[in-house]
Length: 137
View 1 (cartoon, rainbow, N blue to C red):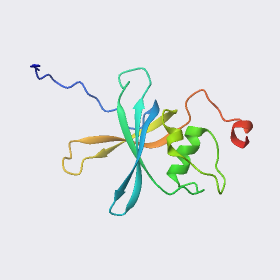
View 2: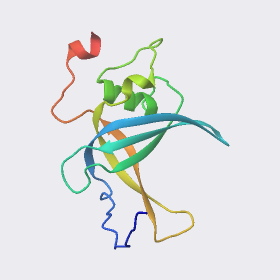
View 3: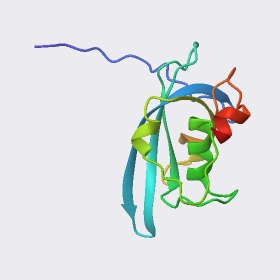
């Protein structure tokens, strides 16, 4: 039978406001009291102390052409393209794609000394720029 010994945790939160390289691990739809959301899970791929960390983000399931539509913004950054009316999106096409993520912290609702990391923005990976051909085909 396996035996374990307790040790001090060396886990550190990624500093708030950091932008780190990551890839999309999963995107799952979840129904809440106020409506449906997409729960995104990213894995940090940037070399350093946070390599392998898993961080979540959330978007609405609404896919509309509007500057405040987080799902549209994140999909555009990941696919490095724009969308026009009538274009479709299969979230399976986003799995495994590399990007950069912006980290913020949320304070725990029951423990004011505890914080949770979350993704608040997704950007294209570093070193890859959009060209007219990649945008317009």
